[in-house]
Length: 156
Image (cartoon, rainbow, N blue to C red):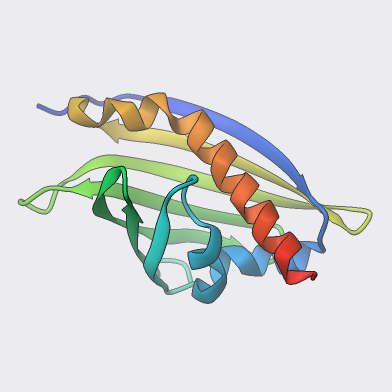
């Protein structure tokens, strides 16, 4: 049984790095696989075809959670200001997805730093994956914290 919902979160983080570098961390697989997903997850596979309609394919691994694929596609790319992508997770045996959403990421230059604003809207969430909706706010917060740590590691 599928439940249609609309759940959304908006998270903002200031990163002490130029906007161009922060934007590239979102669109270059070798960068994204270093920080994507909340704490405890690693990304051994990250494939990004960065163009409108281009596909996203990411394998997320965690010792506390079964391995799962995330899919999606880029909807809008306005480098270095805005990135919009659809995301899907928890693929079923029949090819359907248990979670679907739209993510809008804004990158604002603030005197050499970057204000990153994530606006994530879930458009589909099957009941057995309600934990993902419940943890959306914390998940995005941890993901942006990992991005910040990764960007800082590049400066050393």
